[in-house]
Length: 155
Image (cartoon, rainbow, N blue to C red; front, side, top):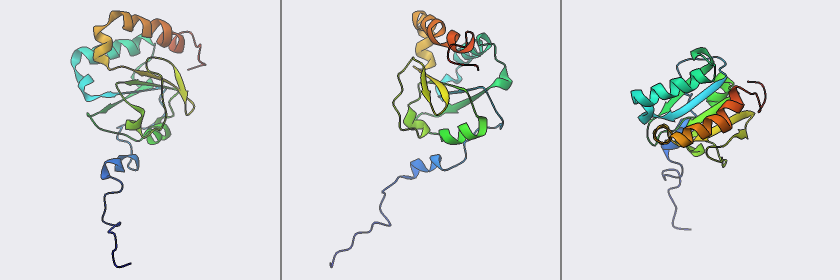
């Protein structure tokens, strides 16, 4: 019993995970139909323009969407975004669920349902921009049925 361990001062849980208890950093509040989460590398004007054309193709305006941009290695608390914006659809580009504080496995480039939302986790926007077949596949197989045909429920 002579040896004591300094458990209080040990790094059991890194401060990196504090983000999941802090408020989500989105400027606006209010319900949005779609939340788009991507990496900061997608701030490239060409990729940003492609994303804007996608959203316009959905028939949605800026008032219907919110974009969340994460730095490389960055995280944000999904449950706070969900509470703040009550989205019906979540599009992610190059984002792993653990970056959102979610312990779930999503099938990439396919529709997933989680937490009352339709999720479409995709490869990074740069990969989509470079592959016309993938771009067409995502539109025809998933995005069009979600946003235009209502195959996954009313949006």
